Length: 359
Image (tube, rainbow, N blue to C red):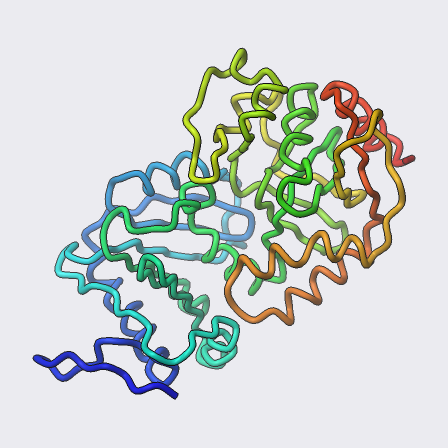
């Protein structure tokens, strides 16, 4: 175990380690209540969650307001409250986040260490950013060095770590996948980056199908396996943007940190985002075919397409995640989706499959 550095003036630890992370995480939550009290909250109703966010004005606040898809309901009594406060050093006397010390930082070991205390925490080294949550108390905090000191992907899927933790506690899961649906039913598109998921989602939207998200969606493996929206973000690389003729529809867009154009589902869809779709299959896209077709895939192939990216991108213990994705791969049939070159033909083939379930 490494030795913590201490501030020469105050004598307090200037770094965090495994022996002190629980105390530091609890202190951040406590301090957030006082420091965040001056920030007006805005409420975002989500499936099973009543999310309230306190954050200073800026790009991240705009991304939260514009990107997360609210789901209003007549009865909110079943929603669990979650209050997230976003702070940075210098705001109302907030201290700078402490870096991790000399010992190795093992995020999943950290998750197991904090779980008995009802805490979850994650540290992002590049920006010295802390994220801490107590779902028992319905409270979370993100502490940054400055107002713009967050990872570049944060604006595309803001608060995703907190939502991942909260929904895992509720038995649901954030899944790194795309979706397409029709008539209340649909499919999950899973696979590594560059497999064709996002292009397939956009092709379907342009041809009248609906989607509850691309990149991260909320999956519930209850009596009926279903997917619900959390984010309305879509992305396309320049080649896909040109192939789908998106510049003619929504104009040009600057490239994001991945070198992709970023836009919203509502800009290309012909129908509103539905509150959920019942999933009837998991598809693994592969490009290069002359015509779109579906080929049965094993549960093992489906699990390998689903689990690795979602588990590695999200902090915390992995055991429950593996169980969730294994159950999902066993309950839904899987198919390899061989993608042809024409977006309209891809969408038509998927519509037929969603309607009749025949590959």
